[in-house]
Amino acid sequence: MVNSLKKPSQFSLWGLGGFFVFLFLLACSQAPKKQESKLVYLPVDASAIPKDTLNASNTQITVKNGVYFFQNKPFSGFIISFYENQKKQQVMSFWQGKLHGVSKSFYPNGKLKEERNYKDNLAYGRHFGFWENGKPKFDFFYIDEKSHGLQRQWYESGQIYLELHLENDSEKGMQRAWRENGKLFANYEARDGARYGLQKTALCYTLRDEKFKIK
Image (cartoon, rainbow, N blue to C red; front, top):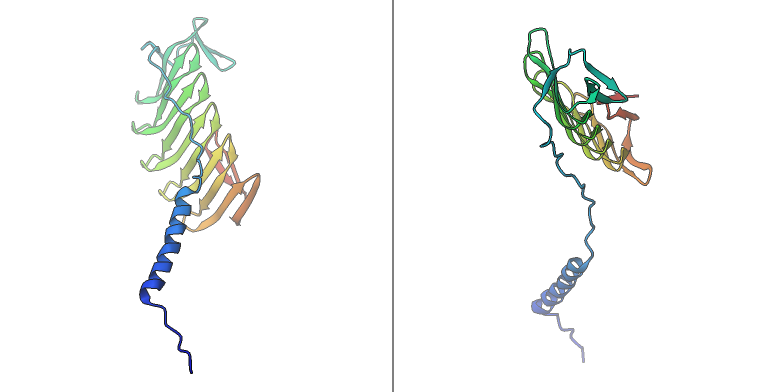
């Protein structure tokens, strides 16, 4: 007698597959989630700064070790400078002689050039700027003078130049750079002091003065 093999039913095949899919989804749902580090950033409280304003040309303003004095006392208020056409060039905010709060600079045509935030003379929070044509130039983030998070810079044409991920002034995560024609020439991950990925050239950058150079 010839034994005939019974073909599995369609129901049993789909049932078994569904069971494994269920187990897979259950395992994924129970897997520990990767916790992403979050920046602790609170806006600078500049409410105590008086509205006293000095012209930057005032000869009674002196600077000692980065602290601004007026009539030999640490200055609290605003110092403003002007172009020859009497339009504002820069407005700096101070508390007890130190940069504190928002400071802005402008182009001769009155357009915003840069806006920077400080806390007790240290870069703190978002610093961003524009080219004279109004296109973005840079967008950085600091906590107590150290760069954190996504840092970006653009060519004057508006084409993105750099996207860096930093933590305490050091590379951490994906780093990318483009030529002005839009072609990617650096695309790597910085992890544990090493770089992994495309590096056609070395990136050299100084965040304090926003000058990014290509070696």
